[in-house]
Length: 415
Image (cartoon, rainbow, N blue to C red):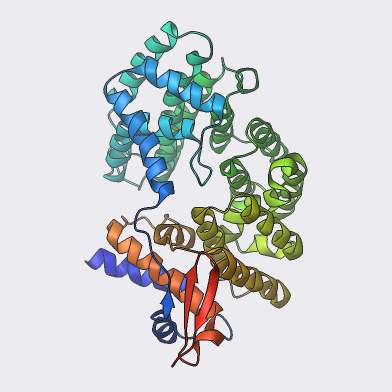
């Protein structure tokens, strides 16, 4: 309960930081009670992701690596994905390595070096399977082990200081070891030759453990997007990889967002500009200063016209709300983004996906464990309804209600 209270306080402060001319938290809560919007605790997107992850985990636990390799290769070839654009091949691989990575992360969180037996067994079993696989089925096992090494490498970077884990250079060396091994495992395979976006995505993930230039990052992601233009996952990852905290720049991010528009216009129209900026602008307020709000608005409309999924409508709205938390946004840009958020909510939101809002409005880097799923759902719902109440305060001020339906948002006058 104490942990939940601390996180709830932190989230409330972060989610509802008061900006000029905004309503108080109490006023927003009162208005929220007059918003009629169905809330889904479990969404189609979550079910789809869980199905692929569970399948990967089941086949790994059964040590049926050949079947797993075949299904990953088939998912890659077909560009299979979830309604929200997550790639099935990467979700299968995530489930397959989940047990080993979770054990390592738990040990590091407790300040202890992880036992290497899990990774060693994974390497041995997967290598044996790869030797017996043929053609395009040969790479998925190496992919799984490489991604597991990268996950453990990142866990070493984030591990708390303890005598057992050594100082920061010791942890950096451990992380470097795992990224080096991942690079060795992926080296024999060419993503372009195999037509395998999962391999290209793994090569991009390797950049987190390397000293690379902004141009090298952009080129790697361009190769990935060329293989799989339909998945917004890669475009969003590009935006995050080009943030200044990752060695990029706001100018470089804007340039690559425009280049991705040219590359993916046949599929997304101008939508790639929004996808590249989406996570970046909610994580780094400095991105908004470089944003072309008119172009971003066109991009947002293209995304929602081509992908009218409710997961996407919630995601775009939540990330816009996250960006608007920053009180230093220039007034003209704030006005444009607020109008876009109002348009997206009124014309495209039909149901509330609370966890999407929690994830968009809270960076999970606080160093404390997250509360229960139910608590996160409540926090996400409160955040979303508070945002909606603030955006449509003029329609709620006289005691009226607003309702969301497949036909759009409409007002119910106070009688």
